[in-house]
Image 1: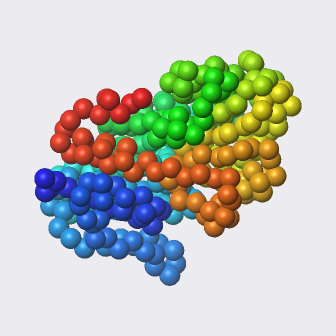
Image 2: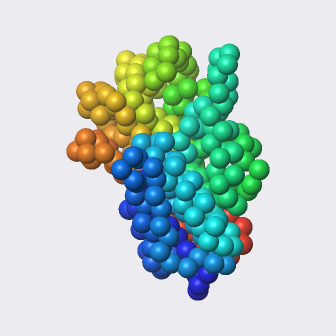
Length: 314
């Protein structure tokens, strides 16, 4: 029995939080998260959390600054209400792309956010597919960085068959992810060498590996403006790929992303529900959403019982 557990959520993705609670067989905690007329975040925790193991489920997705502030204020609220342990469950970690200095006098915002979450009172962080693994080291508290690979793999194995499958990393930074994914599919690996022209812009330069006559699965951790994956799909098609499918964990899908996907030759875009889709994305019939609620609820259960979560890291 999960007698000493409480799960709360803000306004970022209440549907995912509700699914996690249903999997755990508990009710979602009573919390009211709103804003004053000037935009200040307001949080009211409407039940006792004294001595409880509290999990706050809040992806810091767009609008990033608002959802991040909701997370911080909720953490502070339950800390001041004498919660025994506070775990910040962050399915999507905003500011993760700013994990290093790329120019003089540039911030490392991912580290700043980690410091703020820790200072607010979180005792532990549960994340999913962090953009860069080193972000775990930005925290001085335990971090469990799970991967959506099992969820994506299950769908691919059911719906994509044949020996002519190749997994593709859209950049050199994602090679390890694509290689591990391809190994479990028994697929070969290809890499796209790209040169970024500026923020949210990418130019495809070269394809390393054999893709002619193959079913291609592009694997990435997120799709933002879709510039990278659309250019990758075009380059792969020109190189002889018979079909291009995209798998990603976090469907940010900002700016012209949906228009680019609809005008591209991409067969299907498979995403998870770490970030709720906006209206235009929901209307796009090429986007397939898979739920990570089962994975996260199992992690929450194991953390509560102080069991190992190592078997979930695949």
